[in-house]
Figure 1 (cartoon, chains in turn brown, cyan):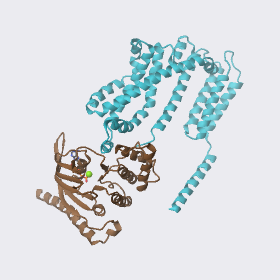
Figure 2 (cartoon, each protein chain N blue to C red):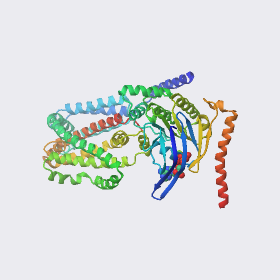
Figure 3 (cartoon, chains in turn purple, brown):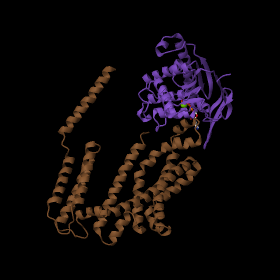
Figure 4 (tube, chains in turn green, red):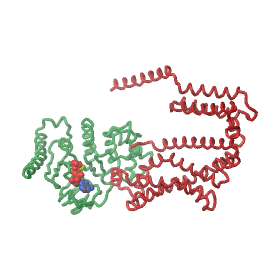
Length: 264
Length: 324
Ligand SMILES: Nc1ncnc2c1ncn2[C@@H]1O[C@H](COP(=O)(O)OP(=O)(O)OP(=O)(O)O)[C@@H](O)[C@H]1O
Ligand SMILES: [Mg+2]
């Protein structure tokens, strides 16, 4: 049984001026321990797909199953890292992690929980920021805390929506390698949304390309893990895959231009 | 890396050197002025020949010395530059007051000599202390109840969109009515003076707090709510562990404002019907045209307000250690 199964998922947003279909018949499955990147142009419905998995939105049609059970609400079996920094500003780095641990039913004395939180902060390279508040952390540091938070809360599934989208290239590379290592080490199932082709190839066991509200391509990445930016350079498999994904994006652009020309 | 640390340390060091060099070279005009004024004041109090109605200058001198002491402590902690200027202003005022009285131009009843006014703090100390206790117990009770119900009520009402849309416009109207307007009525209607004062202070603080809380809760960052929801928080946790801490700075920031309006209402109410308290003290003696005691009462109230404002400031810094 796949860890995550999405069957015929349709999501419509309804508001004052009618409805808007964001996803239309999405089918996909993610195996236990698999790292899947979801990629596609802006507005194609990537975040919408994740919001259903997070339990924040309910499917209009179809269903989402985790371990064969339908998802109807948020749950601590899933850990979420948003693109926007989602730490609570009134809690320190440690406090944020302890909060999430308590929500996941991890109990213990405040001191014990803090000690565990510190271990995870060490893991993400924040040994000197235990007591800093989010306003005292850079964007990259905040996302490190967010990663430490989902790790400490011990979720089986990581749902990450462009977590490194707003981070400078040097830090982004570090964070990508960090999440690749941690996910493999802790055997997590990861669904990682990005619009960065290189990021997807670096991280994914499988890349799912979404466009036009549904899955358009499902590509297994055959390149040996662990991968680094350096090891990918010049790898023929990397070049081929990169070309393939570029074509998918480009095809979309060409279609749009073509369409407009017809209109003109 | 090591080099970087080194140069950074050097930078810090040289900064410190620069700063101390600046400190020794820089002449602190504000502090010099304040101390010169203090010395002149003390000299005048001690040496100038006094008219017959002037009482012992001991209390006046003690007050001036106390101001000087506080000033020196604050100044050498190096917190605020403006302290020296404020203290200079106070000394200048006291000096002018003293000289005015010495010149013989002052009306002995309307402008009593400062020695006599400050002497009241000694002579009437029991009365004044009792007044302080009476006022503070009412103030604390009224403000405490108002803050509690304002915060909790605002939290619950603000969280439910339907309620929020009902209460926000209503509270906007009510909270703009100055409580002093209905204070006389409340004092007349309520069974005891204490109940009336507590009620007036409660309304002065409750409505603005309630309104600010509703508005704040209604505009909590969606991202905060979402990140709480994905952690599957239950309703009490959402309200008290997420939205409350998120909104609290707003209320605390208004605390000194709330306190000011509470104090205003209290002293106002006390002048209407109390038998104890700070406002009562002033009112009673102004009825007897005892302006020495009236002025002492006013200074007393000002000092208490200042002390409480400093405490509120400290509280704000203690409670809110974070920023957005
Ligand atoms: N709450 C909402 N109500 C109505 N429409 C929405 C809502 N959220 C998203 N949409 C619409 O649904 C579509 C898909 O949005 P979504 O955020 O899932 O895209 P995305 O693939 O994540 O884009 P990006 O890469 O820019 O983040 C967009 O056209 C968007 O305007
Ligand atoms: Mg998105």
